[in-house]
Each structure stands twice: as structure tokens, then as C-alpha cells.
Image 1: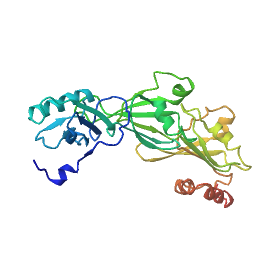
Image 2: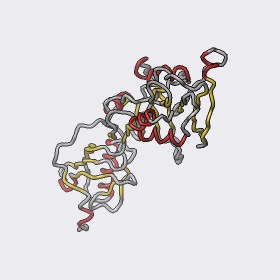
Image 3: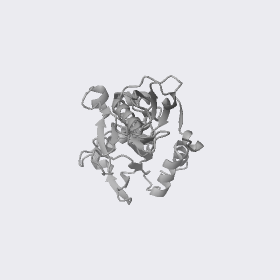
Image 4: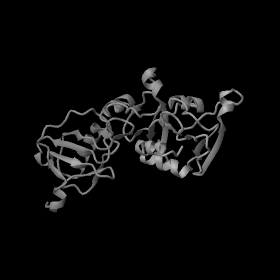
Length: 304
């Protein structure tokens, strides 16, 4: 029986050594090596189709491979060969040469973002180790997104894993077992920006739980310069995208006549000088966009 050349191009003899990969269910796009005793024409490597089925030469039907263990696939191939009258009593061996159906992606604030195949048992810490650990700008949590376990439901499930519990406390319940299909994202730590009439304008880490306040932010900026205004401002973008200017009476906070104000990630704390000259939010956003050089230029230009 002759088949078109394009059909034979899907297969190649399994002459190369096959990796000794851990046994786990076969998936779509995995590379399967099969051999049939005393039938070299069926000693092949076959790529499972995206639909989860395998197609073999000289066989009209197709064989379900996705979600099947190698031993069960051996039985299915043997039955198909026998039912098709190709081999009377086939002895089939199946191994997985390459897994392509269990990708795990690690991205965000890690040293080496990557995607790899979950071959054998993999934990969340294993995945982060493959990414060479967290980057210095990593925030306080890791987001693990999995496909929904409910058949036909497209909405993925996301778990928030605290870094302190996972690494510092070594909580084994947080070290999730990964099977493939997960996306691991490490968000960058939130920052607050202190600009204007301070000794050290810049971006500073916003501690989780609203632990970063106006006074703490001023301390991180090494305090006020002389002739600072008594009224300072918080510029905040709301979840709706609108811009909000919040005036703060700094003298009342210092004198303990008013509570210290917590800052949120991405807040801009701006301290004008005593003359009342101050930059608008558009100018401040340009400073943040162009970084430290523009920030220094703003300070020396007197835009405070």
C-alpha cells in the first residue's frame, strides 16, 4: 500500500536513543517512540497531533493518545494492528521521546524568564530555581495561574503565594505541585515616588499592608530641604484611571495633630517650596517617565 510522501514525512525511524523520561500521561504534540517486535516498518517516532490523536502508516483510523499512559497506548496500537489485519499477534513498546504538552512559564521579576516542560514531579520552588531565582525588584507574592479543572470552562484559576511563607517560612503547603499548563508570574514590588523639595528625590519600595506613610517616605528621601512648603501633595491614579490630587498639611502630621497618611504603590508625594511654586501632575509624570536625569534637572531648575 503506497501512501503520499507528505504522510510518510510525519514519521521517522526510531534509531536514536530515547530519553529515559518519567512515565506520565501523553499529551498533544508529544513525540512518541514506538516499536513492534519483528516489524521494523512500525519502528517509528510519531508526533501526537494537536487534536490528541496519532496517525500511523498503513492504518486508516487514528488512535487516541492524549491523556493516555504509554502502557495503555501500547495496548491500543496492538489492537489496531490486529484488527486491521496487519500483524497477527503484535508486541508493541511505546516510550515518550519528548514532552511538549506540559509547558510551565515563569515570567516577571525573575532573573531568567523561561518556559520549560514539566517532566516528572515539579514544584513551585523548582520552577523558580530554573528561572535562577527572584530578581531584586520582585514583590512580595507569586501568582500561579492554572487552567480550570472544570471541562469546557475557559476561566483560569490564580493563586497568590506569599514569598515570605514560601521561602522564609518554608511552608510546604505553599510549594505547589505543578503538572504543566501553569503560568507563574512574579510582579515587581510597588514603589512610591518622592519629588520636589527633599534631599534625595527618587523611587522607594512601598511596603505591603500600607506600611509606607508620608513621614516614612520623607525619611527615605532624607528629609526636607530648607524653605519647604507646609502643604504637600499626594498624586494618585485611581483604579478607574482618573487622577486625584490629595493636599496634606504636613505641619499637623509632624505636630501629631493629624494622623500620618498611608501611601499606596505608584503614589507620587510632591513637596513644593515655600514660595508655593509647584509642578503639575503632567510635569511630574514626565519626570518619572524619563528617570533620574530628568528628576535632577527638575530639582536644579527650581521646579519643586
